Length: 113
Length: 115
Image 1 (cartoon, chains in turn purple, brown):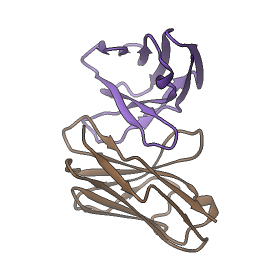
Image 2 (cartoon, rainbow over the protein chains, first blue to last red):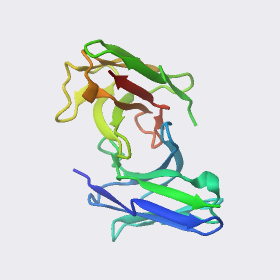
Image 3 (cartoon, rainbow over the protein chains, first blue to last red):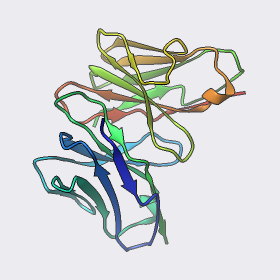
């Protein structure tokens, strides 16, 4: 099955700096890669996603890049704000074979004011 | 995106009792339902997958007789933790999906504490 690894497990940045979280996956058939933000005591919320036919996607301060050859994808948050502090999860799935998502282990991001 | 609710948001129960958790969407018809559990500071662990009209498929190590899943309709699924014990204390989260659609939606989670 798919194996998703995520780094770092914790990340602290100064407000206004950028944050980068990286994930690798093992199954080259995976073709959909969402990122979720989870605040304390709440369910994960989708913040951005990317499909395998795209190399990069951006939504305001958030961007995701995908390198299919290397089987890794990254989340980039620019101009970080204290409200960006949360746990972020990456995931990978093959939309052709089923809907099961394979999640990374999470990154706890702290933005220091 | 779709709005998915879970009820209750938190529950405290005595050991040996059963607890039912509902996952409902008002604006999304889910052909597939996923139930996850999450321990503090850990990732989401898939417990079971339920497709409309079929019995739930449980992940290895998850007792199907202990965690009863009912995919009652396209907008409602329930997870019943039977004879709960303290080790079942966890954060339970549902996720709704639909065939052919990439995006899937999480519920807000239910915090279960078994005394």
